[in-house]
Length: 322
Image (cartoon, rainbow, N blue to C red; front, top):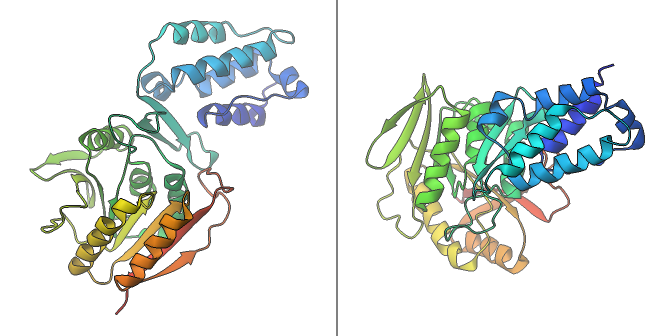
């Protein structure tokens, strides 16, 4: 008898990178038929075959799952086959994470990223908690982004920008960073998740266009904003986990000031996991000194995307004082 609730729970654990923790009654329900459904919903999907998760996690997950099953169930042959094949594969610096939006397996954001906190001299090659938090808030407030031109600062691997571009009714989304490896990864992730868009390249940016919607990737060095040239005038600016180092606070403020010269009515949303309270307080003080006002937006629990709501976090809405 098929147990779709159990298989969905197990599949979500796999895609979220969580190790399975099965109760005795759940193991008894994982018959060969239910194991087959799990495999078809995860590692046998075309998406997973093309964009596999991290090798080490897959090995640990399937070893643990098989250890649960062997005393109680006939283990599906394809479980052993998958485990053997994945153990033979090489470990790469990059892998893929599949973020299931609203627990809907037909609605997945797939991101090429690394598990390393720092790679090739940048922290921008993995998805950080604030990006999940900001994306979830945006999906809970889609009307904020409707028909808007959005500019993202410090886009990293592009999870937030891609999620908003794909699932909110924006007019344009321009994702920016300053590291070439990061920009290449954003382009990769756009092509994975928004494959129906056509690429138009120029000297300053890559624009992916479909109908009236444009998704762009461009280099933006916060220390060089004297001639800030954007494809579109932004109505909204977003940033996730970009307030983490005292040395970048003034360059970030310089960018915000430059954007306000382009559009003085722009709304700015910055999501932060507060690791150092002094650094965050200094950012708030610098906002005041540069004539910005801010308000903290209350965050509810997870709506569409799972994020760790136990962390010390803050979502700010920032505007220029008239």
